[in-house]
Image 1 (spheres, rainbow, N blue to C red):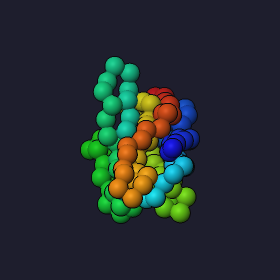
Image 2: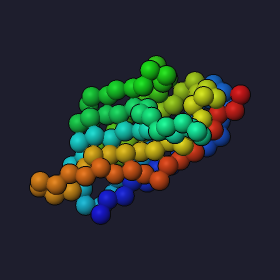
Image 3: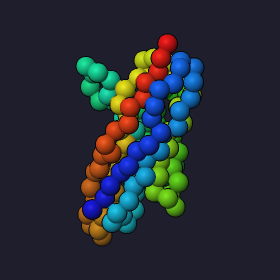
Length: 120
């Protein structure tokens, strides 16, 4: 069984910074991809950033140049450094991961979510 545990959310003023962390634990052979999504009230969940094979990154247009995703493979932990935060970044942020749990078995996991609130 695999768990993703997020931390680092909170309340910050516009222009401020936060760093989110997501640690994966359990029966993990390897992690092929990890990412962050967010869901604001009344909106669909959207991709914020992802990192594949620990190297290739992609970002949603609204966060390019402000957010940075990184991974610590030894700790099975992905981070999202969020700078120059704006009120429109307010949302629940979810971590997800594609994980190899057995020789020929891969599965997709979600964290429980962490609230990020940016005040104007």
